[in-house]
Amino acid sequence: MIHVVLCDDHALVRRGIRDTLTEASDIQVTGEAGSYPELREVLRTARCEVLLLDLNMPGRSGLEVLAALRETDPQIKVLIVSMFTEDQYAIRCLKAGAQGYVNKAGNPEELIAATRTVAAGRKFVTPEVAQMLVDSLHHSTDEAPHQALSERELQTLVKIASGKKLSDIAEELMLSPKTVSVYRTRVMEKLNLTSNAAITAYAIRNNLV
Image (cartoon, rainbow, N blue to C red; front, side):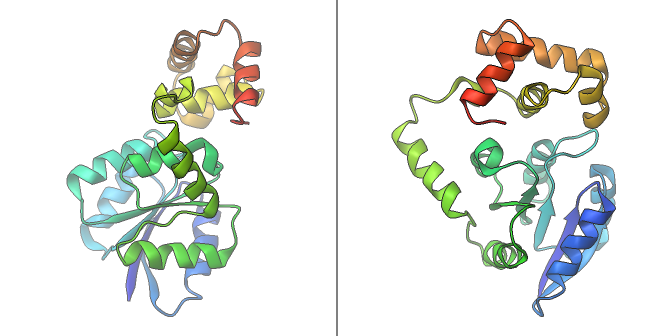
């Protein structure tokens, strides 16, 4: 039996994932959490071979949670289940220590297959991610400038390019508007951009939105 814990801040999403996984006779959901503090409490008692982790977490981002887990619970295998498309975050998550990456828009069979693959100790990547990995080997010395951004900086870039105001971004990420403004400034400095319009143009040019 594969014991799975779900961590996503949306209860309806967790329910959908749980219902999908219960269709597999060899997978059992042993716990759920909506935040990192809740996850720490759940992991104290729940059996967990595979953690299904959302990236867009309140307060503490999914990649930050992933890094913390690598320190405190290295035996747990992490499968990222995210709304972000593969070209935005998959490679970043795999480099950070995740065993797999699945888009929430994918089919249920893929989620089950990914969970089984990760539980067996193997990496799960879609054909699209596999191609990106191959491409990254050939262009490792010529990475796009946004690869140097932190996760929060990249999230800020994507949300600005999607037309959202700083106040809306702050609310979504559970940060202060001042903090989001700092991330915006860092994005512009690192990418040599001067305005939101330039940020949007960069994101479109690099297929980030």
